[in-house]
Length: 255
Image 1 (cartoon, one colour):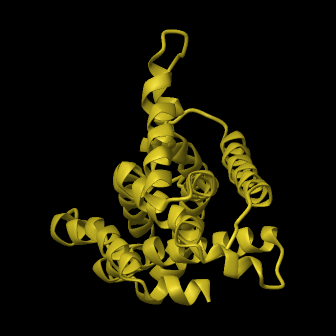
Image 2: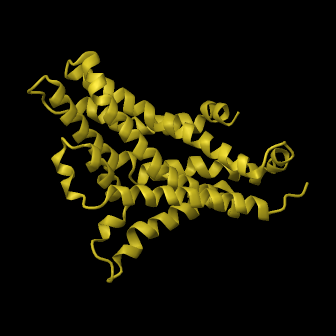
Image 3: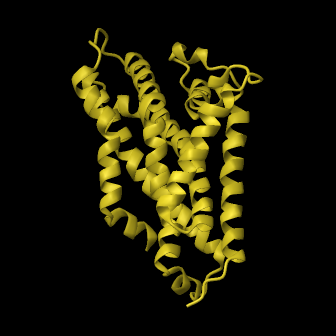
């Protein structure tokens, strides 16, 4: 039901259209093709996808889109009072949180997955590689989507936890974005932090992409351990979900 509600919502459709902006930009500004081959396609795919991921899809814009999407899942139920109806159902509060979160991840798959897929197909057609090109770039496409869901999903889980505390989606969105902005751009500027850029989500995204996008040598500027990045964001996601569940158990919802 949650997935159906999200897929029918006007907000999700607008977010999806916004995420198509890099695809439209690529339509009109793509590089001149000098070699029609699978290798050239993969190099171009990795270069363009990493650029748009770091600079748009997972940038402040993408982060804000996910925060708005995820903070509304539980926050709107609490704000409208419909949470009391949900809690009368034969489901645990933990199941409610996990169900909402998985529904939100499905929405994220739509918001980001459709633009990724359209751009992949367009690039394959541009390089005239057909089904061979689709197979050659499918692993890179899937990995791009995986790291997007991991990194932005952790922000979404954090926004869900705050929505349980603050009760209103707008307040949760503003608070989540404020905390994330401070964590990425304000605290690293303190004098005892070295290389402050490594504290941003975009930089850690580059670390993860470097592990898979081996044909894009420009990613060598991102120094770090992909395993550490993976564990950190997975831990943030799990901890945030646990806090959201605990928050529901500690609150009372009277009719």
